Image (cartoon, rainbow, N blue to C red; front, side):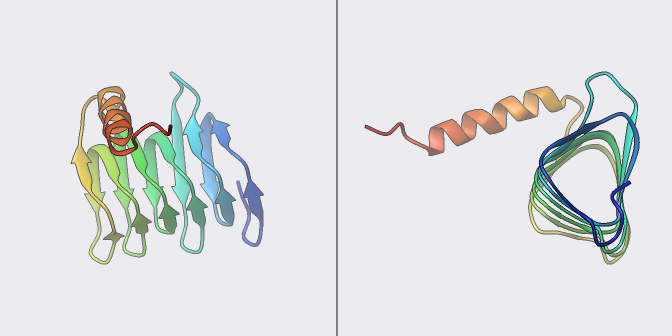
Length: 125
């Protein structure tokens, strides 16, 4: 648990259940092949990419979300980034300032996104 008033700077890899009530400046991801649930409560904030099987969000995320199993966006959720999901539940009032992309294979979507960025950014001379 990241308590209210606490700020963590750096990337987090976890298993089990992680509750964010404070702030995280860095990416959050579940350990490969592990069950994991991320919950960001109202007042909680993540600035970075999120890659988890299951996320329940009622706070703010500034970055892309990759939910390989299920994503729940509650009425006060605000996402500034693209959302990649298998199953999604979105309450009235939730806001997504980015794209929504249904996917059953996140690995393929990440590869497509990397290729698109590579095309957009020409090599420097």
